Amino acid sequence: MVGPARPQFVLFGSSIVQLSFSNGGWGAILSDIYARKADILLRGYYGWNSRRALQVLDQVFPKDAPIQPSLVIVYVGGNDSMGPHPSGLGPHVPLPEYVENMRRIATHLKSLSCATRIIFLSTPPVDEARINQGTRCCDTYLLIRTNELCQKYSDACINLCHELGVKVVDLFTAIQKRDDWKNACFTDGIHLSEEGSKIVVAEILKVLKQAEWKPSLHWKSMPTEFSEDSPYDLVAASGERTLNPSDWTFHREIQWD
Image (cartoon, rainbow, N blue to C red; front, side, top):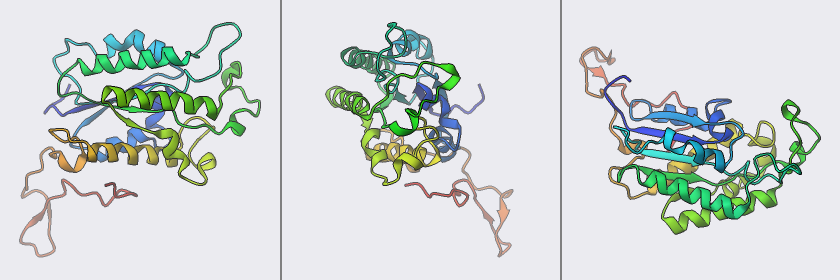
């Protein structure tokens, strides 16, 4: 641990979380946006469903931890929504159980601290044509992935969040607003490309900006670490003062709101 302590934002869930620092991913983008404002912690697990997330929930988020996260962003659902394997093995979780598992995850996270905020990400769509071309990753059995199933689990997550008062991003709808989403938003028909991740970031920032949380967790409202003026900063053209670079964002391809 290094200091000073910053607010902690934890990304928790399955492969869309684990890979969020790959391919210009949404976790990496958030780390850039929140540089000198918050620490983005990655707790993503490839292939996991809501059952496995529940198994480790107390270990990842212990209630007696001396520091609790300021924000937890949760994505679980894509693997749950896959069709069942004939053996009974595999990631599929029936929809009613998925809802109950997500309820338990939300309840546990709410209990961590009165200052811990939560955002759920709903199940995004998939490019059915690409993932059903007969390719098998690591020689795994080709399980059914359809947008009909994705939408059912997405809708169930959204409805649960409305019931519990938890903020939620409707990824199933947000991604499909882009005309070329099937080609642009995925690396393999399932996992997010840089363009897909940009949509996720925009939606998360929209929630953070609109939320009436005190203190606000929107990046423009949070203090920047060591932001005081210094005589050691770059010297202005006039030669009479220095330029404080603490909040410069010109390096970003997108000037995020």
